[in-house]
Image 1 (cartoon, one colour):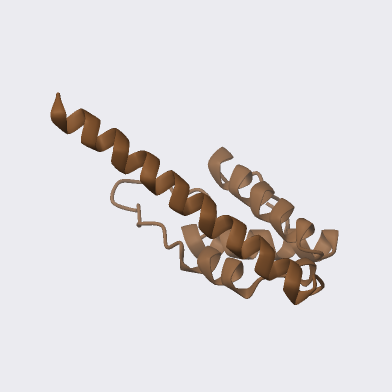
Image 2: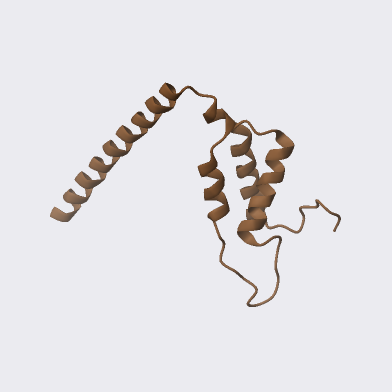
Length: 112
């Protein structure tokens, strides 16, 4: 298998890499760099390509994905502070609204 060949990966790993790559591109990272980072993240999470044999499975570690998400990207950094603040306030209001909906639904279910 030549270097860079992705045939040794599962379909799930390929989907994950594609999704991660898209996220990086949305944040302003170049296409090649986004692909490189995406595969590095998948490798770090899953331990590389397909593994065969009993007892070879290891739990996935999602810390690399969380780390990448926390770092943010150029796209968010380029927005003015007021716009980011407005967006955060809108998100907080939405979460609060959803929480009250969920609690009202659970109260109705408890009465039945």
